[in-house]
Length: 137
Image 1: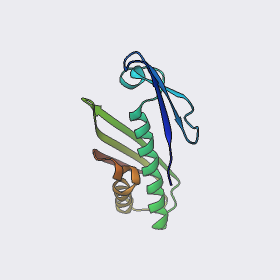
Image 2: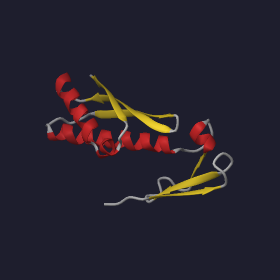
Image 3: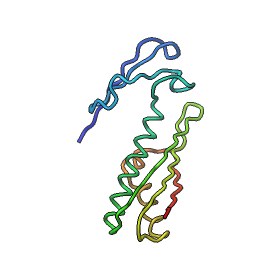
C-alpha cells in the first residue's frame, strides 16, 4: 500500500505560501505558510499533520488491540501535541481518554502502552513519544 500527498510552494520561505493536496483529497489545495507554521496564520502545517497522523494511527491501533483482547471500546479520544524546538521535532505527546466497559485499569494501561510502541506512526518517529492514558466510566 502506498499513500501520497503533494506540496506546491511559491515564493520565499517567509513571504511565500503553498498548498497541500492528499491522494484522498481530504486536503485539497489546503493553504500553508510560514505564518501558519511559526505564527498564527490561516492554514495547516507539517507538525499539525504529524499530530493528526499520530493521533489517528495510535487510536486505531488501540482499538485493534482492545478488540483482540475481547474488549469493545465505547469511545477512544486521543489528543496529540508535536513539539518543534530549534528547528527539530523533539516530542509527540499522546493523551488518550477512553471509555471501555469491563476492562481493568492494568489491562487498559498495558494495551495503551503497547499501541503507543507499535502503531506504524510511532515506529516511524525517531523522536520521543509520551502517553497519558485515562480510563473513564
